Length: 313
Image 1: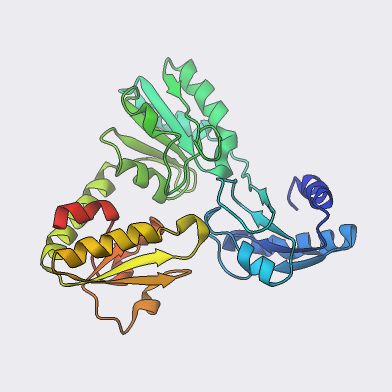
Image 2: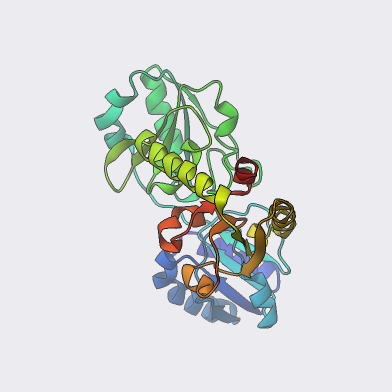
């Protein structure tokens, strides 16, 4: 069960909620039924469970909750980054206990050429930051931990926000990610010229992002060249509150059309390749979640960011 279930119950009581909707990432859904049962039993409230996937605090199901007559949304797995909501939201970050020091000791030689290191992670592994900082400092390193400007959390990054790391770009010799997967360390690597390494807790490796960064940069350069000659552009917009950039999409549409291109703004909640079937498009412009860029092979079309438009016009 979630360790802070008592805190959850206190906050629901404080907000006098009688009917709530729970949303959680796919990996945590196996535990949500147990939570729903306990909340209904202890608090005598009605609990609904959202079956839609959630990708972050940018992806709140608050409007659905209000439509269903709920007076509160319980968002599991992510920290609050100040997305607007139409009803109260309780955020329940999910913390994973992991001791990274044995793994770091195993690969410490890969960090010997870096004296100043900025460390960062995601909400699940925030508990690893202090131990890693202390260990690196015991090895004579100078360690930086920034603060996320929206969440106010030290050392936490989002796939669309690296404000807890990028301010140290000039001071740090490298960035060190603590966690799992390629998405977050690679996202930072594509935004900085400094080395980015990932201490991957699942693969038990310290991975330099340089090779993957170079691969994606080559693909991006190719996509930009293809887009220069393309005629039909689809501009992707998500209606998720934290991903809704319709004004940006409208500006891009005008610029493309002024350059003699055809452009359509394509709106969806969750954007998938299947939803674009039947549309005659040469290039996609992503004005939604950065994760869509990772799926360019699934979309089978060049995917550009808004910043790339200057390069093709």
